[in-house]
Amino acid sequence: AGLVGSDADLSVINFAVGNADLSPEQTHKLDDIAKALKERPALNLEIKGAAFQEQDWPILRNDALHEQLRRVRASEVNKDDDKKIRPEYVWLSADDYNRLLRDVFIQQFPHLAKISIFGTPTLVNDENGDFYAFAKKKLAETLAPDPKRLKDLATERAQSIAKYLSQKAGIPNERIFILDTVVDPERKNKDITSQLSLKTN
Image 1 (spheres, helix red, strand yellow):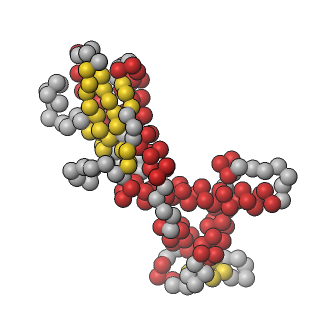
Image 2 (cartoon, one colour):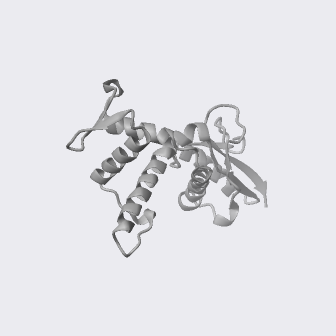
Image 3 (cartoon, one colour):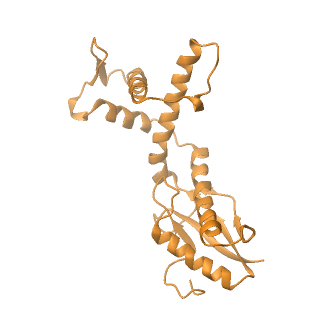
């Protein structure tokens, strides 16, 4: 920060939970860093992307649930088709998603819901609200944190920073280094940050 006369902490870039997009406030910080790098060609930048299980996983697990339902749908399709389809190539319509959500939820929690003769699901306890919203939340909560998915998010955050600096701020790629990403590094507060450091070339 002293290099550009800024009061901001330029050693960290903050992100929203479960997200790798840069906010305008953070891009402003990167613009200041780019200015310092342009004025000092002997300096390079190192980026260490990070993710935090406690905060990021509740967002990521919704994607993990969608992936689980795609695997169930792929199994259905592959039973009746000679050509096998991989789960990542399965597209779920809204109807498919709700049907699979219903079936998997009732299979795992048969005591929490019932199905009418028309196939309409309802919750035994009406106070739990809408069936599909409750089922999605309940099933997502059963999914254990996925280290790979968290590491991927950490990598995406580092790449977002590097991409902005190279494509928007004009810093050559050879002056930007992405270090190994990390999950749950030590930190002083609950901010979701990726670390930046300067190094002489």
